Length: 62
Image (cartoon, rainbow, N blue to C red):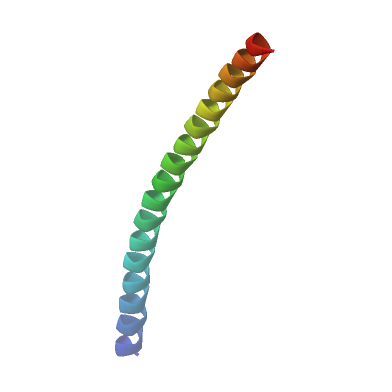
């Protein structure tokens, strides 16, 4: 039975290591998503600013 116990412990350790790798990958992906969201927000702000400038220019030309 000692062999079975060692096999179970080894499998548990292997799974724990795999979980640590998955968690590290998840943290990296979450950081990447945050960066993309920040770029999205910045782009939307730039579009809004340009739209405002266009509206001002059009109202002055009218």
